[in-house]
Amino acid sequence: MKKYVINFSLLAFLIMLLIAACTPKVTQQIPEAPAKEETAASASVLDEDLSPCGKFSDATSPSDAETAHVLYRDFLKNKNWTEAFAYWQKAYEMAPAADGKRDYHFLDGIKLYEQKIKTETDTDKRLEYIQNIFDLYTEATKCYPDKASMYKGLKAFKLYYSYRDQATDMEIYQQFKEVIDTEGEETADFVINPFTALMTDLYLAEKIPMTEAQTYAQKISQAIDYGTENCKTPKACDRWDIVEGYAPVRLEEMEGVDGFYDCDYYKNKYLAELEANPDSCELIATVYSRLKWGKCAETDPVLVNLKPQVLKCYPPEPPSSPTVYCKNLLQDGDYKSAISCYEEKAEASTDTEKKAQYYLTIAKIYYAHLKSFSKARTYARYALDNKPNWGAPRILIGKLYASSGPLCGPGRGFDSQIVTWPAIDEWNKAKRDPEAAAEARKLINRYSQFMPSKEDIFIRNLKVGDTYKVPCWIQQNTTIRTAD
Image 1 (cartoon, rainbow, N blue to C red):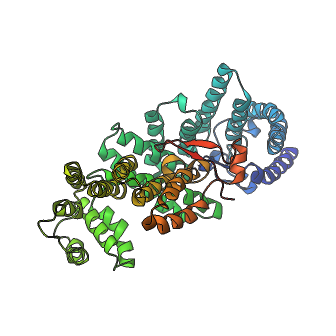
Image 2: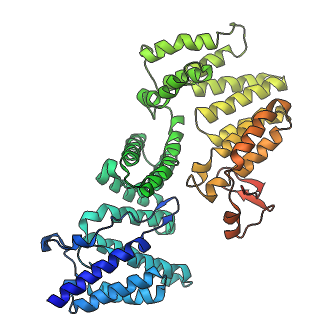
Image 3: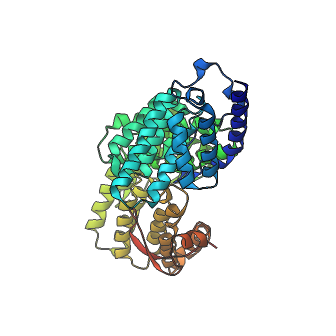
């Protein structure tokens, strides 16, 4: 018995040394395994606190099981995948729950099978390894039921990013949803971004009802608030920063859906900015129209206070003005009617200058208020058809592209950075218009620093100066450039 205690203490010490080397790295835009690290001291617990599954102490030869564990972890640290896998198999077969407090044998087994998948060319073998990964999540849930939500979230995460052909979007969404229903505001950061993307896409595709999307949009926001306020380490807080740079932007798409967000949402989002810039006529008008769009009551004190400010900033036009009705609709937050109004004016006009102005106004409504980037670009291009050398539509199209990082990628990294290429293309064209040149140069200088790095280009076997087609909704050919 004394020999066993000494071996176990040595094992715990070695595990502590190995923890740092085996901490999961960031994959996609978020950390892949949020399992809490535990100290060796936590091994000294009552038996009833241990996993019900096979442990070192249950093995026929506990010392052999511990040795296999320590050896595979050491090989894993040094990325000797073949040796690590062989010893992991032994450790897992003899003691799947390890010491009964740590789920290493499940999560490490998943890592090792993923390494096999990277080099396996046989389709049947790859499918077998994928199934083994999912089986390990299932077994982990049985052995460590208190971590069931984490395993379910990790499985959904793998399905979303790595094995998309193994489940439908709705099935993955449902798995993530169960995690959020269980964890609430304490939902792990790695769940938020993929769930937000799925929820938004499924709702816009009319595959889930508005009430459900509204419920989970609120839960996502609550989880982000809680996570950012309660993260304890710089690494954890950085993960939440990544989430903050993506999920809220995707949720903003819902602002273009009539009735999705209520009056309080728009107050909470816009009033603080207005209080910081109380003399901005543009902001006064925007906030007023957004509150109207959010169905705030006419008697709402905020609206009552804002209305005279709007009239002061933008005095009513004479009734004879051809666009007075359209402007009133826009000011009142009736965006769809305003679009129809301006479109009628554009179609009826024989003045190409006015047609261009009308179309650009429509483009701005789609961009700023209805969050439909593709439609905004369409109408900006209509404006260019009528006034080819005008820089303003080019400025807007560039902003559409530059704002698409979270729509076309995770919000950070290569897939989100490449949107700067077509944006800068548009602003370079806008510089030809003297009235737009100064703003275009300012935007180019600002966003050039966000282009991919030389290393990003090199590791993807790309070449500076070559043609590259930016995917997502943009679908534009551009030229590869770097920030450095």
